[in-house]
Image 1 (spheres, rainbow, N blue to C red):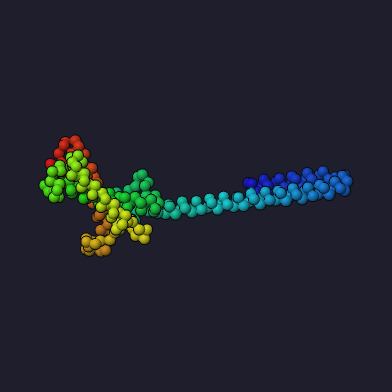
Image 2 (image 1 turned 180 degrees about the vertical axis):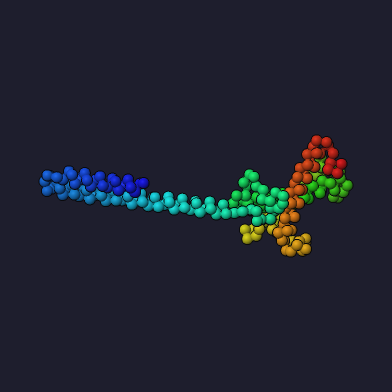
Length: 226
């Protein structure tokens, strides 16, 4: 549209200059011709600039379209964790693109692994405790015990070291894939899809379990085993 407008301005300038030169002296004609030339050059510059701008806008629009198409092509139904009965379940659209999916999958795996240890620990600590923490109450009561808080701080620092060093995510690997040093997946194949499906689903169940354990304790005052 800008290019067309520039061409219109160039045409009008040329017609006005040609019309004004009718019946005028030779000097005036030369002056008008020079002015017309300058006007035409200026209009041509505007037209060229408008054309370049239009091409740039068109190129940016095509680039955005290509990006949207690439995002739309991602399908999480083929990824681990999309199992029956829900299959690929993402009602909030948190995994619309591969980049966002990988970020959310890494978070899901980390939360699931922590929840599996926490839900088991909430039951076991009713009968067994680490040396030095015998006086710490089980469950949420441990949050008010100095010894338990010290142990939680040490555990937090240890997790930070593992997170930033040994267990850091890498772009070349799948989210949460830190190998299988204990060889748990030997019967399924090296960290196969079947094994990953089981791990993700156990993690999801554990997240629901720990929420239920802590909620029940907050209401009743009894720990998970009770």
